[in-house]
Image: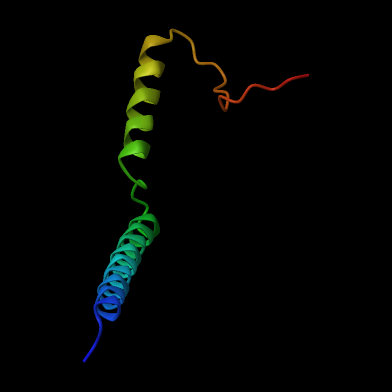
Length: 72
């Protein structure tokens, strides 16, 4: 007969395994999308939309910076 402590530990391990399997599936799907040349996710898509909007609003093209400030 198993104790309550062992039962709790068994459930925790089962939950950790389930979480790890889901994470692995998400990573495989993400890697498959990247291999096909698809965007990495909604943030990538939003960045593209914002970039196109900025291009329409600016009358002349100019160099896009990385967004990081550089101290000289």
